[in-house]
Length: 427
Image (cartoon, rainbow, N blue to C red):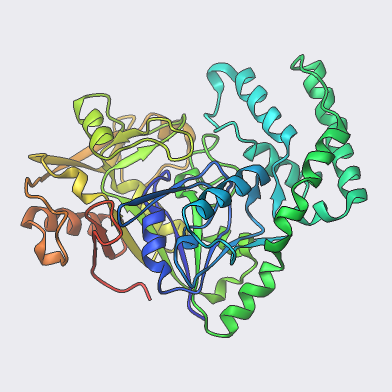
């Protein structure tokens, strides 16, 4: 039962799309198990760049079946637009499967997300405003709309009415907004039913049968470990579980079927949105990392906050995910620095702390303790083996591996599909 989980080991945007795409030719199914169109992956194939927001990266690999699992929240208009865009570029999207149990992002979820974030002012979380959080809240409050509800107008109408009973009170009385009409929402959602129908399936059954037949299934997280609703830098997190455990609940596959958990780790650190970030840089180095690394959000278009590598976070990701391997990305971005700082611990209230503090207050006040590693100036984008890398680059990778607690099995040395050094096979 060769099931693998591939997830972000920092705050997201580590390059999961490239890693998934590289494995896509060797796997039979690629499954998104959480998140929505608040996540984004950039995949470069030859001279073509693809920005994927909701679709699994495996959709670009011929022979691979891409799956949107029950743990994902789906905006039908975004999904259909993304499918249309890929079809126009000659990508076959006909094999896509969507769980009938996945929840739908409704127009009122988007409205609530935007007005709530504005209302919070300085206390805002930094959401994408795409309705992700309110949709997950509806799911937990048991007033959510699922994909399967699009095929029963009576049930759909009852559920929309139930959801809007409360939301319209909030919108009109608290936020001074106009009430949302039930029939208008129902009509819009029903309009998606026929277009989505060819893709809807019992994905839990499909995936478990595939594993029983020794098919290779790759589970792809949408965001990073530190954005996990339970294990991230709460409240500055997403509304689902991108950590490894989320793959089980978000796809309906038992933990005993997972054989490998791969963490994607950027050679430095970035994050989008608000929240504490100990190694964040506000100087020329931070701007250089942003410029050279092309650090702009795939989905949001926002500049990413940039900082040096944080080994404390990497160790934490190894622990909470049970990581068996790392895929280190964007090592090429660090070319040109004489010395590269690496955060090996924090200083909190004058004390050295080597593990991630559980207290939000402590983490907010954490100051990075750096170790300086020698840099390199040679171009590494053509490196095909680990020994092709400059000695200082090799030493940097080995240091990060030792600090992070799991072997680095692959290294990204450029944005292209082939610009990767594979040290150990993931399969």
